[in-house]
Length: 202
Image 1: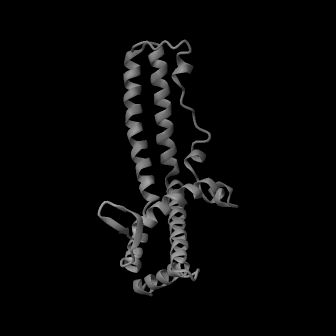
Image 2: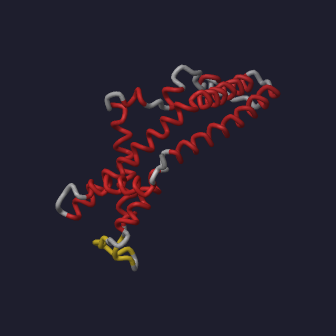
Image 3: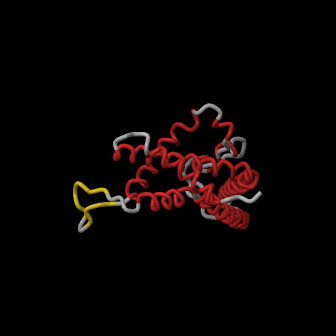
């Protein structure tokens, strides 16, 4: 059975435009639709990150733990004035940091993937709609759909981030980075290694 992409698109289009017609007032209806669309993007992006943790949580946990373990060892080697061990541990810690950094970068990007699709759909539906600015920005006196969607998306990301853990069953559905590293070694601080604020050179 072949999948008709045009039919799928039309169904998605009908579902999304429904939210823009919930209110009779055109401007208010548009803002309600933008808010719901932004919220959907935030939720789908969050679930995508959760899915990535479900599929790759073992690797994320391993890289994070390796970073913490080698960073801690490098500090204790520094305290012991073991230059060779310090350099070796620090080198491994730097490599682990690179892995963790790019993993976080990829996860951040995975949470944003619905946004371009939402903007594409808005462009097809509202490309000719302009919103007059109360105060002109230079020569610009009006803005388009992106000017309303992007701030709303940021707001919805913030609001959803505050309530997501309170939603029934949502925490069990998703696995966060904090959950993945709940039982791992903690990174020691300089104050723990050098309680008298003395940091000898390796």
